[in-house]
Image (cartoon, rainbow, N blue to C red; front, top):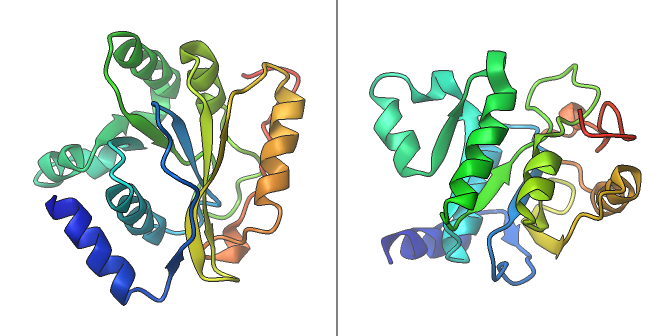
Length: 191
């Protein structure tokens, strides 16, 4: 109740406009892209709280140190050790298979310059759990943010990524110069 009230206040005062499809009705892997700024985190929480979506999100483990740990966990954070990121996919899949119900927010591209492709963890989680993918977005050119369509991945990585690219082709992100084209390193598989 408090989170929805905070979200309503945020959207009433924000220069950003929430334009969204209805919230997914079942657990989903929610892509947050283009992820070009740490401000995307605030927008993601405001979307989730406004639409009453229980979300978990992946964040670098340094965000969970010291006094920040209980806050980040309370906001739905799951720490990621970048030296062993593949273990995170296994842990998330295990949580979902154990019956936990939540939307998993994944930002497959990063906030820093220099990335050339998206990470494939979101694809592996969605395929291994049978969860659909929901396309969340931030677009500074229109000052809009929200959720796009949800769909089941087919296993044809190239075709699935073409569909994702089509959706994000006109989305610039909060900091457009950091935008990374939605492309996996190897679209013939999911390494």
